[in-house]
Image 1 (tube, rainbow, N blue to C red):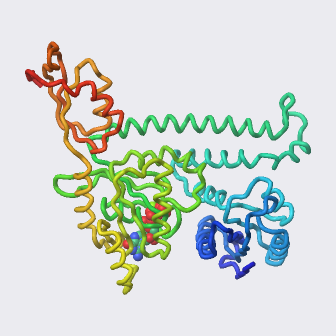
Image 2: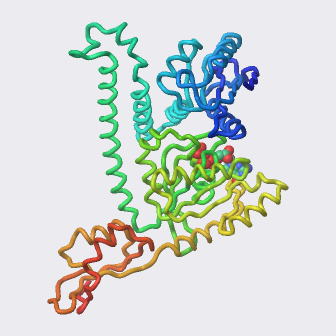
Length: 446
Ligand SMILES: Nc1nc2c(ncn2[C@@H]2O[C@H](COP(=O)(O)OP(=O)(O)OP(=O)(O)O)[C@@H](O)[C@H]2O)c(=O)[nH]1
Ligand SMILES: [Mg+2]
């Protein structure tokens, strides 16, 4: 076991001890990196990290995650240094939490809970607050298993039980009900956002994605002249903000800044942040911002790609943006190696405004490459197909025409010229397929 301890920087902050396991799946260096990040998360949540403990384990102990000897050593440290909270770097089972809490006699949280706590502190808008509460309840509900059965036995009594019901069932039912209300609220927001998005379909949509603290909001501010909060903290941004920016006199796009990703991001958060992540999923192009100031930037890039895969956004064309090049100083080798490995990437310093002209040019090229102009004839009676074009494409113009297929009588149709992604969505292809041979014969007035 490796141990380090130091005093709290702030006497008022909640003192915390971090615990990580070096297992077969996670190498020592990864565990230390992960603990560095856990320390940053803990400090963001208002804790003062006083030490960290690691243990090499062939596999986690089902009862206490770490071995019983280490649990005893941590118990001594907790008592000696008056540690209020022990934070585990991995998710613990309800059983492990219960056993550890009983032995250590202090507050115990795991990485997911810590991230959820930060999200809860940072949520400002109604949408973010609703999304976080849903994730927290979902997390809590799974932790109710057996954890509270002792309470149900102790408390019970009038008002706490339904017929033949234990406290745990009552709690679970109440949580389930609240979750249903929150889901209903979010579904309503989803529908409103979908309508707003439809209103923006004339524009190509670009989303900034990346690891938390990579500099997405700073880049958004530099490109759009906005003043979104950007600071040296994890998860400064939780909500999506969209601004229109000009890439050149003839190309304007909608740029969205959104929540950052992190390794071991709780799945429940991803699920409940669906409304926010839909902005990413429905983008035409992603600007993947990677901070070269962080030595683990390659890992961060992989974590972001994995998260994009999870939310179904990996297929969206991506422009890689290496940010914070000013922080590299004289490390010219790192820059040359990156230039060699990623010839299509753009190198910028969002903070110093370096490389932004080149970024605008490259983004414009990706946007143009990715879109093509097509023409389709659709019978006026097929409102669904016309709605589908308006939904998935940028309509350039439309005219009422007489159109027909060979051997068929002419009928009223709309000839639509639209710009859509080269990889047209299957819904659009399916909607237009029946009219592939429908051609205009006479143009009517507009
Ligand atoms: N040196 C340097 N620092 C930068 C640069 N861009 C951003 N930063 C700093 O990096 C920190 C994080 O920046 P943000 O823009 O908030 O990062 P983010 O990706 O939006 O972070 P989250 O919203 O927390 O996911 C801030 O302290 C910025 O000032 C850069 O080009 N160079
Ligand atoms: Mg941000």
